[in-house]
Image 1 (cartoon, helix red, strand yellow):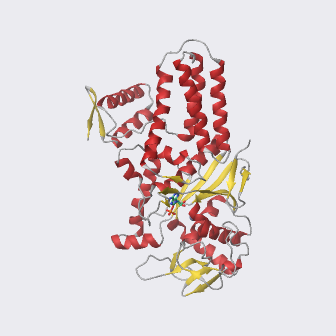
Image 2: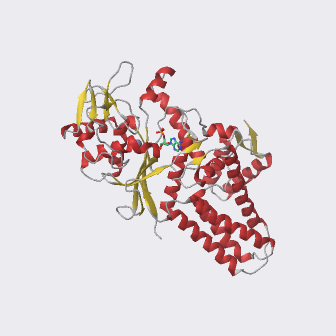
Image 3: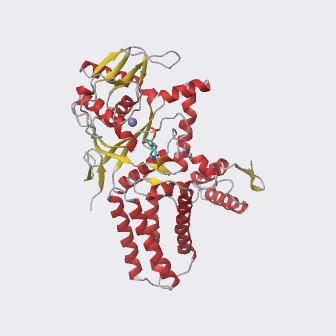
Length: 466
Ligand code: AMP
Ligand code: ZN
């Protein structure tokens, strides 16, 4: 069966192929960097990581753009309160977001772009929309007239009857039953950052930034656009209206939306105060790969309830996988090949792929791998797992980990014993001897990152904790 995704636009499971057959052009709404990103946000970003890895595993190249929203109502409010410029204020949270993403092993999109570096592109787009009668001005701000775009509502299936006459909003986020003319350009207010523009000094609304940056880098029609379900309305509906009003062409072919991470029946969110950042969770002694596993273990279109028991379960599942890997590499198996076991591993790899092809069914993919591991463990106990079966089992683990990426433990200062450090130092020395300086430097950098300093002395290599 081919790769299929559920498209929010058509509400159907559809076979996926990029427009040009080779490269997937994909856009992701990135974080608004007014604070630390929470693990609810990371559920959506982790789904995008599984999507990326699956697309590549199916042979496609990727051109993936993610924006960073670095000018917005909450950012301005917080930066003013902190006595900082919005640049300084947002830089620290952008960095934290990238560091947390790396800790969760999320592949970096090919391009990460900042809203504030595209203001000119946005004012040009707004001028074009004005020239084609899609906007109006009021009190120095410019609004998109949704009545000028007849298919407004096609993504969220909102019913517009009697809702829109003359009503408009100045804020970037609003409720689903509030279909309103939305702001493209906000008139300057005292104390707020502002840019010069043909429509007067001011700053962009949130929605225009994504339309402009997506089309600038990816073209007028892109293959995939992702985000969490809370972005369907109004943000993505507004992106469609702006983009298609500008080009007259379909903006996005496949819209993919991740369901929420929940806490006791409610969406994890800043405003409800029921959130955890990755840092909060690591401070409690959990590993980043346990968080990663938990976030990706349920299919992205199902709500996932966050509990610490769930996190413990994720850690236990990773242990099961690692224990199997240890048996596989450490135990001596009788010679020969058990053909049943060989086909069992191949079947599991095929079932793993089939599950991912089915709209990224991660729980189905995990089940395929765990069932095979259970059978392999039983066979090992019974002496029926033979030396020539190792390769197939290894291949299955590698295949699994190229998508899930949880097998390798994260090294942290507290998890590193003296013996672990000695082993890494020896590995570095060997890497240097075999002229693998990239690996040698990587080990030094990794250790330094964990607060361990290596010194090359005449007597040999020494290390100390900072
Ligand atoms: P924001 O910074 O609020 O724009 O959110 C960044 C991304 O996280 C968006 O794609 C949101 O849809 C998504 N998001 C926010 N809260 C949650 C949640 N509780 N579970 C999953 N995704 C979320
Ligand atoms: Zn967006």
